[in-house]
Image (cartoon, rainbow, N blue to C red; front, side):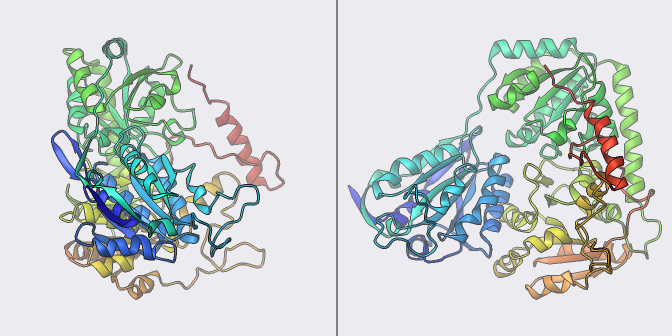
Length: 623
């Protein structure tokens, strides 16, 4: 039996009957499709989505990159068991996908991209928006998506869709390979009819694997832990992807090994778990970073060991330090010349706990990190405290006001600027998925669309997009989508008149904050004049969002509470005060390598280079 339909119609029907299953939980794989239509997809996928509107929900986006961010937010909140598809026209719509695709692939989060493409039959050559490459007639702008996709194919004939669609689903549901998957769809092929085998549209369930640990690797891992005097777990995003938070808590409680977390791994333990010592690395806590400096065994669980985590190779100072890497991906399991334990995190941690029965770290070590943690929490309290409620808050006090309001059901979404550092050091994560930081790509503009995706995946939760003014100006467009569909996200918009994070970094590396402030130019060519008269609150309101302005700490507390109770998209706008030594966040507790000018005439750069060379000299290759 065959069913005659267009390629686009067949693809929509196929996607509507794909499911995932893990641990008995079955989910629809493609929950909805985002789309902006142009000549490259309006008569193909656009018509198909209309034809099969009952089978495939549709969301109207405003920016192609933002649509990918929304799909990624949905995928992460869905534990990678479900995602969205994104369709665009050929040309600028397709190339706008590249940033979102890179973010998805770097963070190992599934998203299906369906950009239109030029005519496969080449009836007119070139067609509108076609990139002409003299040496390769089969290249289009969609080839930009190849290096940032985990799977890429161009469907030049209808029959090519069947094996390619199946391969795409395999990659989306593979816990190691998942990321952006791109099926480029020539616009004439989308509208072409074909007789499809009926079996192509049958329900199909893709099992998300939990590979078990090799017994020899497991035994070796247990031996390493038993011989360590100062072990430290570094929990990465793989803990969340595996849903291994409970078994990690049991492992930590049984062995009393402290657990630090990367940005992606924060929340693996609740902040008040006795073994949780906070964020690690350049944006980490003093407690976690000091433990990392003295650790003789670092147990990485689901982490890629990025430069922020390792302080660019300077953090792990113990000359005898060894690494044990529990990771589902062999590539990551072998990093830092570590002992690999290639397996699903949840299963392997449970097996390790059994293998280590009766083993506990020394009382003196537990006392040490417990006291250090208590001292750090006192510093957090000082940062959050606002003795004068009728003054403009610092950014730390903004976080303190939010911390006092939320519970374990709230979700915080952030990605870029100065907020990730403050959040990693200060935020007290109350649940496994409260802390949603995209820091694999740290993409400005991610927060608002991703919050929409999170809210679509968890409509019963309060979802906060924490956004600085620099990030807000990158991509506020999906506010319109939230208003249109009544998606009640909360936007906390912090106005600090520029790129505060990069401004601080620029100052530390001799750049003197050049080009980082949103101010009028001065006579010397720098942008150090008066702040720009930009009203971002009015901008958000003009896009249809309800906006609450907060001028003081007292105003902020009331506005946040009102926003949290709102059932419509709501923005809290607050201008922050420059942090001082009392209420500002603690400085970085570990280094990060940003190269400094080797020669310069300005004294700031000369001094920065001297400091840079001292730090570089401490970098290690762990062999």
